[in-house]
Length: 149
Image (cartoon, rainbow, N blue to C red; front, side, top):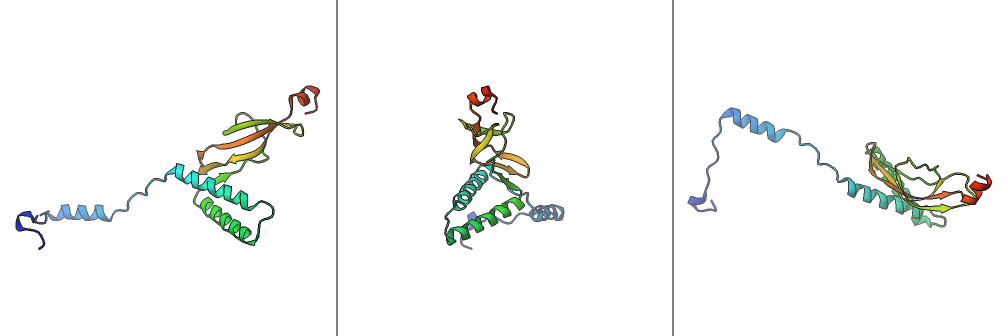
């Protein structure tokens, strides 16, 4: 008894049905906490960037090992329902749900094509949680006028 008698509170007196209901509520599984999708998308984007840097030509053995760990991490996230989509080399049309940061003229192209993904699109359980950002290459206007595209 570490508190003075005036501050001691007796235990509550509840009848048996109330005690059973309280026990059932305490034993019930709690719903999972909702994920912070923005933080998850940020972490996945950094994972994606690290993968790309380590996949660059000239990586040493330690870099290749780290890249393997990152690929394994990405696969585990995919199993949990988090998918990262890179858009490099894909055909572009204005109806796609990606953000274009820059249109760049490229005479070697015959149609609008994603040249570089700056930030990947991210899906959590098939729901879009991050819009991808890309740089799109397009045929030059001169090539289009001359009928080369």
